[in-house]
Length: 136
Length: 143
Image 1 (spheres, rainbow over the protein chains, first blue to last red):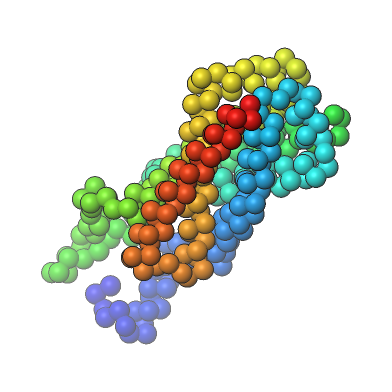
Image 2 (tube, rainbow over the protein chains, first blue to last red; image 1 turned 45 degrees about the vertical axis):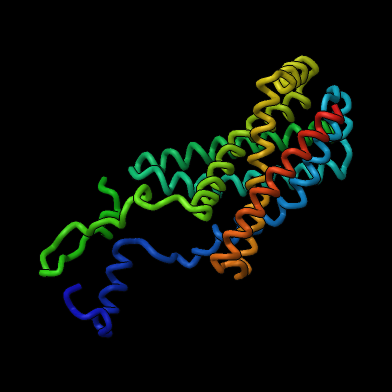
């Protein structure tokens, strides 16, 4: 780093140092960013649809909810909502954890716990919708 | 094991001696502005919504499970605390929703001028408040 940064030699040296550090692009750098946007766009109509549906079923008994979720269109949109919502949420929580949990062991442990917890929640939500759609 | 990011902290001072590179100033030295405040609020609303999915999934699973489970979940949601939580999550949802669209607009490369960023920030706050009020009023009437 004591040599001028603009010489070819130091540029190569820096690149090797970058490799040694194990940081920088692994050729999938935009994957996280892009999926966050894809799910965000999908969630715009899905969120509006769900809020309207939820208001429509406020105070409804279980039978009415099961009947609502039992419709094929509702079940499809609910599964889409669950998939996009939990993917978006995992990506967001991942960044928050990476930003604030500095100790590496604790960071990895927190990330794994978050992925497991949100993954199980997503499966529970999907199974619940499927049960109402198929078993009634 | 040492934090690998320590590798980025090595540097040299103006005399060439090895030093631990100084960090940029902490966030607290900056005066809060509408742009930075709305940015952290976006993140806080997102985390709040993540917590809110617990209630969402409980409601779904209870409806799928049994009458007893559903009446318990519905009872908690219909209590004053339940309403307060749902009102809070409604605000978090609409704020994150509106500000998320503001982010998508930025992703399209638009609205970066300071004046525009301030105006869109104010608009987003207003829209979130109006949508929240509308949702709660329609919800109260529909019940």
